[in-house]
Amino acid sequence: QVQLVESGGGVVQPGTSLRLSCAASGFTFSRYAMQWVRQAPGKGLEWVAVIWYDGSGKYFADSVKGRFTVSRDNSKNTLHLHMSSLRAEDTALYYCARENFGISGYPFDYWGQGTLVTVAS
Amino acid sequence: QSVLTQPPSVSGAPGQRVTISCTGSSSNIGAGRHVHWYQQLPGTAPKLLIFGNTNRPSGVPDRFSGSQSGTSASLAITGLQAEDEADYYCQSYESGLTVSYVFGTGTKVTVL
Image (tube, rainbow over all chains, first blue to last red; front, side, top):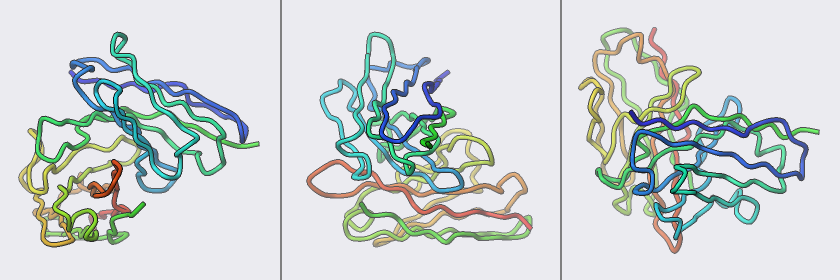
């Protein structure tokens, strides 16, 4: 079965960096675009970033552009979110999700359980 | 980046029908971009509920249905059940020069 397991979250100070990881299993990872979505405490979902199946395309929300980047290792079935210049407003639960180009409209059909990032001094 | 507007909350008694609206614009839903719906039960990750405006993934009860018209979309829950109490989010895409995704503001469904 499809599994996505995020890791790497923690408490960090403003201005610092952090790398999140998402370990994928149960599907052919290299065939799917992967997403990062975050949810601030008590708030709604916010799209963060997408990386194409082969890493050739990477796109970001305006709120993180220039500070976050995304990468993947298809040989290890792993997705990463590299976050720098972290701000208090980046505090959130970060989810990775699979984007399914095989069904209508390309929804996010599987989600991990999330990893919590807290930015505080 | 734009957001899709949803009512903060809706409620209904067991067995009733409730609907959740998702209002976008000519740059997303109105541009023909598909709408998806996600259900987030308390303390859990979002789960895909409706994709491509009207389609249900395997295992989703047919009490849930989606529709789209113009710049808006809707999720209907008929025969409301206690386990439907959750947050619901719509999601679509922005048309433009770059790739951008957009979520709705979220709706809390309360079963009275």
